[in-house]
Length: 494
Figure 1 (tube, one colour):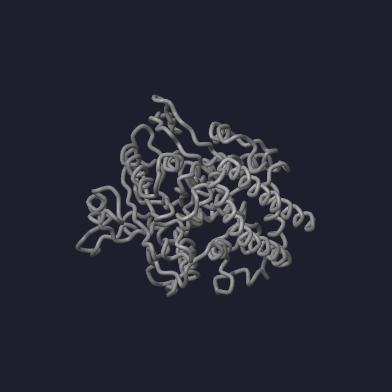
Figure 2 (cartoon, rainbow, N blue to C red; figure 1 turned 90 degrees about the horizontal axis):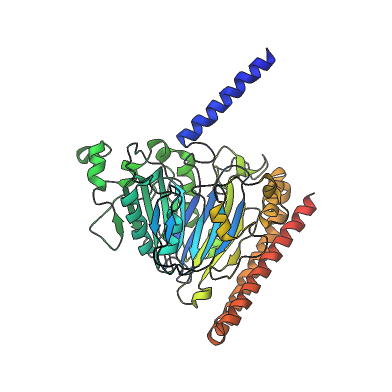
């Protein structure tokens, strides 16, 4: 009888798993993945544009950081989509900094040597009839934006053209595309419809797994791009009635109703806004697409938000960690157990191209690991950042990750993942020391990088090849130092 019972329960579990996979609700694809901030150039302290992101995906995963070299392609060469469709490959293609989560369709981020940064958040739509051609596009969209766009605005146009032609093959998603001049949010809907809005230069936008673009003005080409029939289609589907609903709001019309109203999403968007806004919003009021911050924002301000668990508010159900780790509580926090990496792209227009764009990366959870700067212009990423070349990783992205790779001591991500896990086991006792170490490390980096960038600017004018080797060695040295500090902290906990 016991064996029969176990057999039946196993069958039920497998059936449930396959059903969830079919519905797209398993392995983190539940509309509760990721969190992003975009800051316009007049809302920062130095005139830069910033893009900050937590990549949230459930499970023990392998994260790698690659430098994809710049390339010249021959006439007739092609880019293969996951579906097998071949697209003409333009020449040349800039180098890319690629943040990869192996085996995942929608977890990677890119920053190109042109300073175009792209990442995404799952935002389920209500579309159930989306038209696709040639299998549609999904996984490759971020890579194509990063390779082909010389600006954020051009990246939006490229993405929109591909979606309009092929159709988007997931329920819905927000692509966040930024450069040193501006930031854009592009809401993709399953099928061939999309809308994009520019974040005002003096404002900040927060995204937490639900569409945020409300009113649209397709006549305003400076601030909007999108499908020309975006309103008419919503009327045909019964999602929008001008008489009943008043002025058209994209998010209300196109969002999956459950996701749009989910307090786990609303709470995170509210919290990110409340931490940064000059006038914090009320939780029970409509949240804005964008807002003016309380002061000119710096990277460290965004680090703080990406590490947040509602500390100091009534929504902190850990009671300031007395009830355990805040990363896995009932209230879905901004930093969470599923956060695989975090980054802040600091996109600057006034520095030489080789050092204009500093991407501050924190592997695994940012609450228990440090941010440190990388440049997309690096000739290579530091040793231990990945287990294979960028070309090999692209070729093998959907191949199964060997079990031993998840605990490979020669990969830096293993150390950072273990440190996050060790902190979580005794969060209240351990987090204060860990964060003090990383706070001191980051403060040193801010000052040190500022001094070195003055030297780098001078060297790049006199001997660019020598300067680039020195820059690479400097960034690699910082990463090895961070890895060593993480290993020391982990050993102390053992």
